[in-house]
Image (cartoon, rainbow, N blue to C red; front, top):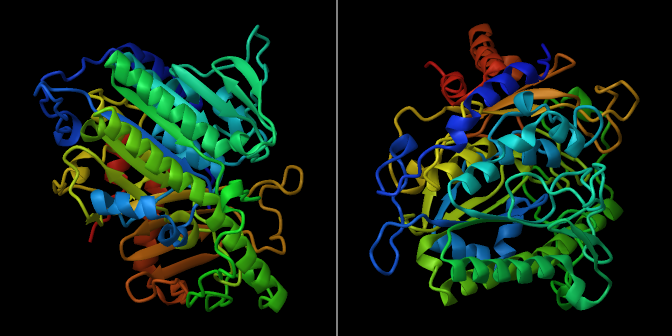
Length: 509
């Protein structure tokens, strides 16, 4: 399979050429339609058109099987719209988060892993991706912007740029961000350029600290009567899945779900899974314990959502604010006989929640059109009345959010995974005992999953008849079927920009 190199010089030149136009785009004060039909603007108490506020809650490694244990999220689903076919560009933290921030595929951000020359905060910063995040555009449009919690692997709160104060990326008015290690206690926060240490007390629990800072941010923005965009990025439920002290003893005896795929490999079994032995009784007990830890750790996230919604209501902002809930990737726990982890192309890892409630969003609705995390940045910009730069690969979800049909919507989403280098200069090292896959590219449609691995192996699953993805039908496909899937995948691997990527994602029948 061909590997596409990151084409930063061309995109950087294009970004510079349109920067002034993009960041200076006129705000739609009249409420007229914007991109893709535009967003209906929320009305203030006085009846005047107003820009909506946006609160984006991004969790880490949250899989869909945790939602039944999150009552505030279930309430959000009841009050808003859920995207049942929402996927990430890679089931790994940094590639996914880079796509969320910029609206670009990994082959355009240049961020494929969590560290090294093609990964983490280092690659994100070197490639100039920070300038193309949604924050500078929204700030230019008159928004107060805030980011709290986890940024990218490799980012440190302390000074690392040779400046007099710790680094705060461009476009953020409020910046309260932690470093590496997934800590909930004993961490440092970069609070607007000042490093502040936190201890081990109950009040130091990071998710709760973020919740307090979030309500303070909302109060301040309300007092200034200024629209705001606030991203709340939690470490939970990522390992070690540390719960708030108040939740440490909750959910005793909880077991992980036993889906049809639990401890059962696909057939025929892919080569990269061939060495996996059945899960032992001890491994299954460990999976149950880890699942319960994950459930406990998200209770504080769920509480935070409730606190934020209550604060918005108290300040009279609830009718003017979009609440967006999602995750950077999913997580498997025994499915396909895989030990706990991520990085695969299966739905356990790439399909994650996306729930939105807010102005003109139908309550209790489910959207079935394929959506992807590259769509979030253009969606936020569309809601703010700005036009995304041509470098954005995604497309605004606003029409779908407001119940409109979009006849030319995509048929497929792209997943790009480069195996992290476990051996020096060997990105496709042999699978480890957890069954992490080799590098691959994949497309997911409503009906099917097609995966092309770097070692030449292929997988194909009929989602309608095989939702757990246990029957690999790749060997049974005709040559024309394989060619059609490969052509779509190849076009998506190379695409740049909304129009080109949208065209590449439509499959000719």
